[in-house]
Amino acid sequence: MSDITIDQSQTVLLAALEKCKEMGVKMNVAIVDAGANLKAFARQDGAWLGSIDIAIKKARTARWFDMPTGAIGGLSQPGGSLYNIEHSNGGLITFPGGVPLKDASGAIIGAVGVSGSTVEDDHAVAQAAADALA
Image (cartoon, rainbow, N blue to C red; front, side, top):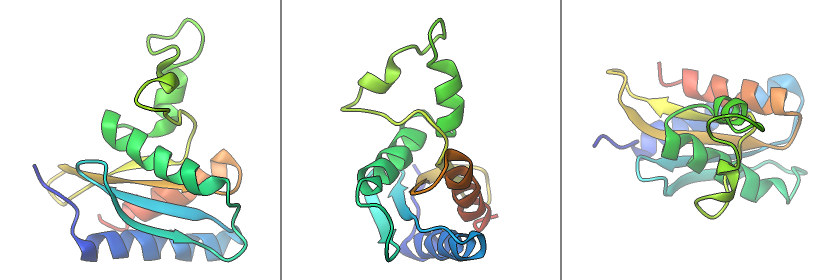
């Protein structure tokens, strides 16, 4: 199994923080490795304390299921094939803001989770961070 390096995690983190600055939002950003263990984290000055755990859970959720958290959210609605999945694994986050991270060959090496604004903003920052590895 491939794993994100510390240098790659710093690239992702810095890209996320740059996107936050560009958008004028204050976020918590979590990067997990291939085993869903926390690899890097930043809480911007003034970012919500309650979003720390959400960012970490978004990253872990994206890694555990190897898909963006927003996609899982679509499947977890009433009548969906993953209805109530957010109650598994000690609590998942099934709204946008978590994105798997891939290496140059397309292998998933970790995930990023972002929280602190609207889910649209969270996803935009997470996607910009993931795109930094491309």
